[in-house]
Image (cartoon, rainbow, N blue to C red; front, side, top):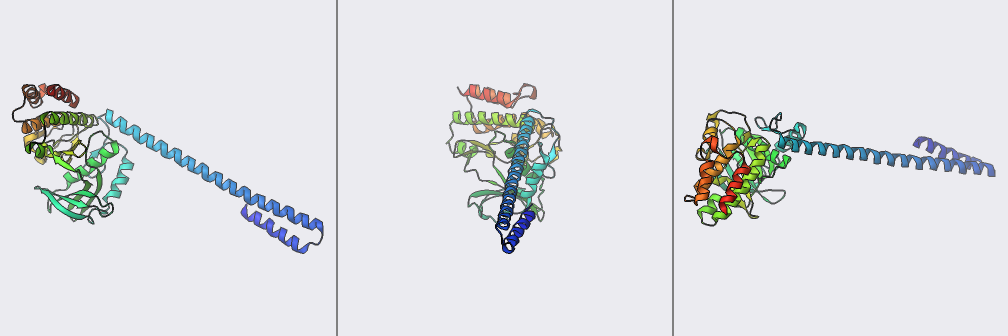
Length: 340
């Protein structure tokens, strides 16, 4: 249409130059008007097409977001979801294409090796944890990486869990996943820095009142209950893995032992702390009760001489399997009742 309009304008110009009568002038003016009108119509049609295409894209994106949120809510109610793998041996909830795309993006070694290390926080038999400063945002971050020769699957699993927790929007405080990288046989996980102290440090320094501790753990039980209903178990709850941040929120860290509910594993590959693991967990069973048992052991470790009401709660949480609390909500209710 644009070429046709330009042709008409050219013809009008030629007629205007060659014509000598008023009728020729009128014809040239008419052709110019038609050509300009056609150009204007074409621009209007292009604008309409762009508006329609953007509207279709917006609707498609809105429908995709709605489907993802619906899937997230559904995954929280059904434990029998077909798992998909984000990292090699990490099972997580649905939306395979979205999570794989983001996992592949974050697997690129950007922002992991270039961060400036500030301090080494701790070192275990498998990992070292570093405090670093992000070169792009200038914020403090945590770099956790495997030691040379150590297996990488635990850190890969932790990266997948942190990523899934953020995607599924579960109401459980945890570090935010930032990046993951594997090179030269070593894994590196980058996550947000939690500014605070563990309840182990606070209780050891006498800066955590008993009532505050019980209320914090009760809220953690509620958060763990949401995790369990989504089909996963943390498997390594202990005082050193619970950080009280500057906002008074108890953040759960160290997700390398987390596994899908009712998915058995080799007990020889256990990576949790045995002192806080239930007998069933030490046998290779993944049950929600493992986390509740660990909450009871955490209380017993932090409160050597608990009041009678709290002692009964601890005894039931860490007692025989058949008599323990069924859900995190039940344990939370019992803790709050004991704190009154």
